[in-house]
Image 1 (cartoon, rainbow, N blue to C red):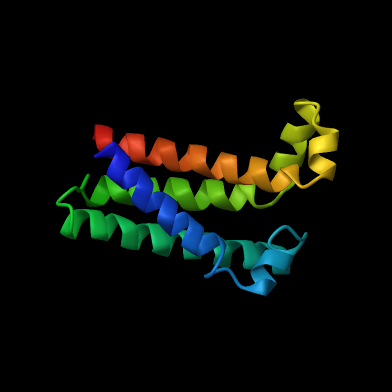
Image 2: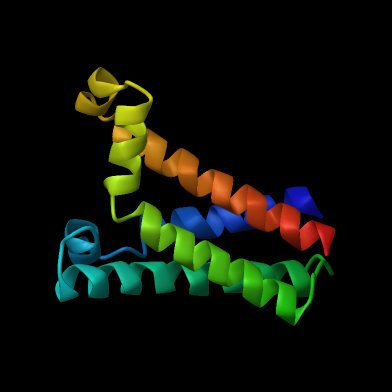
Length: 131
């Protein structure tokens, strides 16, 4: 169950992060103030919806479901953590802590960002498989 849920959540994540993310969300989700938070929340909601669809597919097609309550907890976890990671300061702070200034200068932040998101999805899939 873990593997299939993780793959479906990852596909949903990719869809929400790339073809479903608007240019406005991508440009402004880390901005300070109301507009930045609004763009960030809209993008995080896209992730929640996409991952919700993935969990419904798992339930209907694969007959793998952790139940409504557990799925709601997992979706809350995914949406909240995605919003925090996409504020960009957590990734920048991690890269400073890990002493990766050259990696950051050469596009490494995008890789660290996606790795953080994958860790979040793995935790969600483990939780759903365990309950």
